[in-house]
Image (cartoon, rainbow, N blue to C red; front, side, top):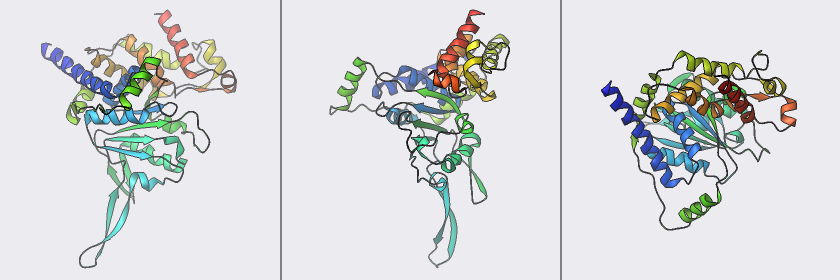
Length: 329
């Protein structure tokens, strides 16, 4: 028991060091950073959404700087082809003039892949990411190749400029463990951003966690205890997102077209376990479930026409569900 306690403290300390290094570069956005760390240490993919200039790309780069992992950036554009992501077979000629076919790996062959403005690529190109995100493999020329372990896709998208964009299909959205909203900074945070970015001293994040440490924490998180009553709380939350469920509140029945699939509860539990480890615990509480529910479900609920026309957002629906559940505990 003492050994396990020491391990939990060490794992929690590693996550805290990563958080501290990110704070050296990124001003504010504590919730965004925290949610991204839940996602990474749980082994999932994250979708960051926010208007231009809020530091989404800088945040992903800074996270990669704190982890001793390979990093690549893909700028998604309408003319991007699947082979630009996965790589392709090329013909090379040896010294004797003999032709050989060799595989040229694409930028997806990195542990951390920044998919910048992912919704600007065509559906054909977006689909090239599906196998990589779900299976962590790439198939080119009939041959399947494994991607590095660990492997994360940290994608960004702009909610304002929809001209020339292709909304992510539900199947791809479901592959993202969390959808993280990057909000506008406060007045004091804006001042600090200006000070940091317009001076000669540019802060840099140090590498403080290795791939081995990350994988160790991911494995440890899987062993975090999940009591039946806590799992019941999470499952009830998920079931209440479906308008056809008798227990669903009126808001869901009136404004939700489709609720979350099974990956919703899987994402909630995985992120909640990492949150518990980061707090120095080896058991999940209902508070952990509630804390991760909104980023885990906001992209898995689909509103009907009435909900959209009234300006309802999925975050409101999930908060209503949490209020109902927490009030009935």
